[in-house]
Amino acid sequence: MKYASKLVRVNKDPGYGSHISPVYLTSTFVFENAQIGAKRFAGEDPGFMYSRLGNPNVRELEEKMAALEFGEDCLAFSSGMAAITGCLLGILQAGDHIIAHTSLYGATYAFLAKTIKKFGVDVTFVAFKTGEEVEPYITAKTKAIYFETPSNPMLSLVDMESIAAIAKQKRILTIVDNTFLSPYLQNPIQHGIDIVVHSATKYLSGHGYLIGGLVISSKDIIEPMRKEVQKNMGANLSPMDAWLLCQGIRTLHIRMDRSQHNAQILAERLEKHEAIEQVFFPGLSNFEDNYIMEKQMKGPGAMISFVLRRGYEAGVKLMNSVKLSTLAVSLGDVGTLIQHPASMTHAIIPKEEREKAGILDGLVRLSVGIEDVEDIWNDLEIGLK
Ligand SMILES: *Cc1c(COP(=O)(O)O)cnc(C)c1O
Image 1 (cartoon, helix red, strand yellow):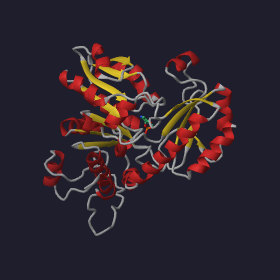
Image 2 (cartoon, protein in one colour):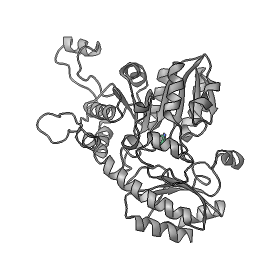
Image 3 (cartoon, helix red, strand yellow):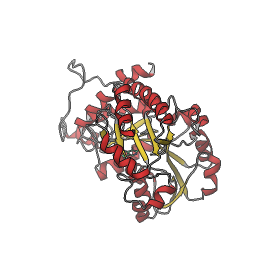
């Protein structure tokens, strides 16, 4: 099947002739007899046992996402952070070293900078785009390289093939957070990456009604993670949320096409606006990582960051002026979301440190939705004025 058909059609046959799967809201599953129970626990019978260990709706989602990210298997978690931390705890152990990009989702950065160190894992943060730039930091203990492309919130890119080439040579695992583009616009495994993580809360859900996360990789990586991390830590996705995700994914291409189309128009107009100093959007002709985009992305996505000339005050004013866009964190919703990192998500970071990471006082992050683009533009333009 072509990709759009896969999005719509990869489903488990739910039985009983129902058009879509029922929601299996059940904590436990019945064994017909002791022998079957024993076989299930031994992994010799594919049936379910207990919903923390697996559930038909969760399995349907996992199989669908493994296909959509071109991986062999997928493991669903109760949030993007549960997926990311579960993945890292699954592959790392005391004494290991991991190289992580400096520009990461805030909670991922905090987990690597603080939590994982408590377990004896050494972390080096580096800003890199290519394998050449990351190579000097690799040691005999390096187990994994972790990054996002495009990154949050500056939308800079990392060349996945060049990182994967160095990592394969040195037998190091590569992990990419693919949340910002969704599997419709980028498939890291096809560029040599070993593990893909997603916050399913964003584009995959698309409707802002749930929190969820996914890890996609080969069977030899996912299976031990399922048996150890998922079973013993218990950050499993609920059947209801898995069901909602399966429905959300069926319209991913349509939502993404429209959001991206709107974002392209908005980015080009924002770039010309006198209140704005700079626009970060991979679809602009002067975008600095254009050559990387062409290698690995099917489109620029629908996230735009821009810097207001008048700084912090202008940011606050714009937030208080918008009426159509929702003033909220998160992204990937059918409705446009707007936020001001300096006064919100990144307010606790001292100004000097914030600016080193490119998060200027006037920076605004826009997650473009599927409304009529003229309405989004009017809303922004009134505020910018
Ligand atoms: C939101 C997000 C996360 C965390 O996901 P949750 O579902 O909120 O736990 C991780 N990475 C990126 C890039 C995100 O946008």
